[in-house]
Amino acid sequence: MSSIGYYLLFALTWIFALIPFRVLYILSDLLFVVIYYVAGYRKTTVFKNLRTSFPEKNEAEISQLAKAFYRHFSDFLLETSKCIRISVEKLDNRMKFMNPEVFRELSDQKRDIALVSSHYNNWEWLINLPLKMAHLLLVIYRPLRNKTFDRLSLALRSRHELVMVPMEAIFREAIKQRSEGRLFTIWFIGDQRPPRNSKFWTRFLNHETAFFEGVEKMSRKLDLAVVFMDVQKVRRGYYEVTLKKLFDHAGQTRENEITLACIREMEAEIKSRPEFWLWSHKRFKHRRPENINLIES
Image (cartoon, rainbow, N blue to C red; front, side, top):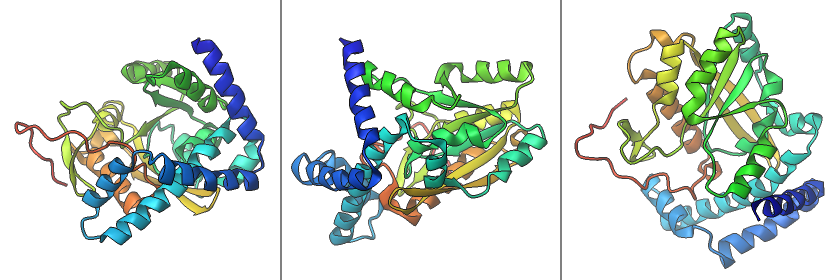
């Protein structure tokens, strides 16, 4: 049954991918009405996250932000279907890298990279990342519970020779690539929610929030360069990516320096235009255990 479900979902995604963008966004406007007004998809979570993250905003402002998020989220869902067949030229026009020379400079210096971004704007359209660098792109992968969606997700993300690696195997894979003389970049989505027993807690969007420490631990062990990837929406269906090098040599940093720097970059990105972050995610679900101290920047 899972194979049948996968092929049906793949076919449906392919059909949506054939739809011209101008029609796709008309469908997105209709989808917004359905998920916001009819289904009310995770509205309780979205409104709670926005209220607690921006206590200075009144209810009218929160409602305006929520609607803007759902409009963008509708676009994002339908734009993702395009990943299955959009040409490199068309995607490069819609997901434009403003300073790819950062990758070239690090390649010339024979430096491996930790690349950090968040669930902001359209991260799925970053499937053209491998074409912007000489490095082999290793993407940390957390399998989805739904096997059908998991299989489709892998198919959409693996068009341009990026390597999907399970979280527990990423360090071994990096060591393997280095031993074979290949330059590599590890792509971290830095705002993932870690387990309840996480040891790293800091303030993020007005919450005491837990974070994975993988970026820092791996970067320091492997002495990677650390680059933050900021994705901004220029207009509907068009994005710009700006690369910001945070550290040349992670092995020379202080404890928590990398993690805190990445968190502050993500927070600044989100605060610049909050409607483009994934507010439907239960990011602030866990509470800090009393025996774990809050780490201040």
